Image (cartoon, rainbow, N blue to C red; front, side, top):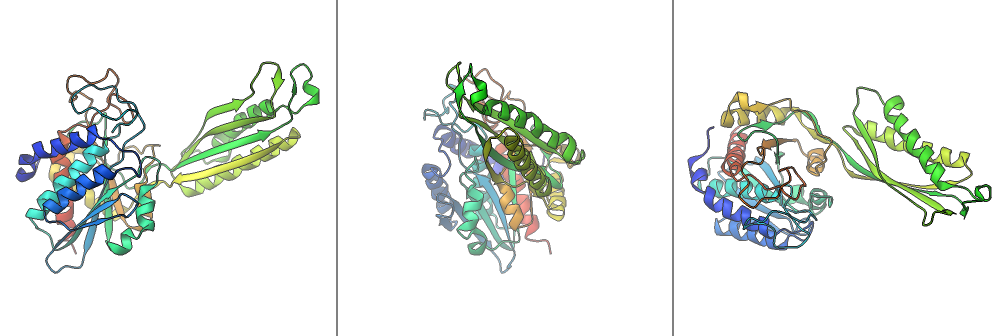
Length: 397
């Protein structure tokens, strides 16, 4: 690997920063301590700071030379509402909150790049280091954009990165086009008429309607959608009733839909609504159909992806870059930024969990798992990628 020596020498400080953030996790739009720490470090290194976009967002502005070109590098910084079961010294000190997705490491890697770029300005133009709140369901990327991120910080392209457990350290994964799915939620309330369970003919049973709808929805995936297009419809909650001898008034279906394209998502929503409404009508009941689109699919731009792949190969070698990594049905709100700006999102291998110190939980080192911990070995590697990306972009015409 072609790591940058000054960044390697700075690794111990980056590790301290990362573990400090890990010990003090903050949920979406509550990242005040984390934002203060980031702003303090950037200011200490002579980097002008913009605060307040997306409530707690922080942007560092690195300028050099006379060039007018600009690029954005983004890291997320919020934690999850998870009770950590690790007991090593940097485990979460806040009940029910945990950095179970590695955003602490993402912050530290981008800070490492900012530190190096502030001292070795081998670029001509502007690098915006973007520390975004509320990726975990809060849509912090959208909030920063609504607050004028791309107007106040005009950039030609924006890039993101996420650690990926189960992938070997020293390797990266990326693909042009769809890389992560859209995330959407539904809640459907079927309204029937309650009755005694011994006299079902006097009521309208919403439970049976819910069962019919739940089964029929799966035909959208198997019979309405093109088999070559991906979609997942998962009913994760069914609620109805309060006693064994009562037919309830209502039943509720709750779950998620994930797709790689807006067209498929439009089809899923419209067919779900039609099936729910017509099935309910067939049983003399009604439905309240609610469908909420959270995050759009994350779609990497071809030109920027090819550029990022070249940079990755220069850092870790061609054999350690999977340029056609399998997309995931997980979601990421960096997708909002890629709707407005060209760019690319990559996975950096986080290993199998062997890096975890004594005192880790017995579970796997997977994302959103209470035994997870970010691999500090990635800190100089991720920071090196950010630096080489920015330097290459701002000397490329």
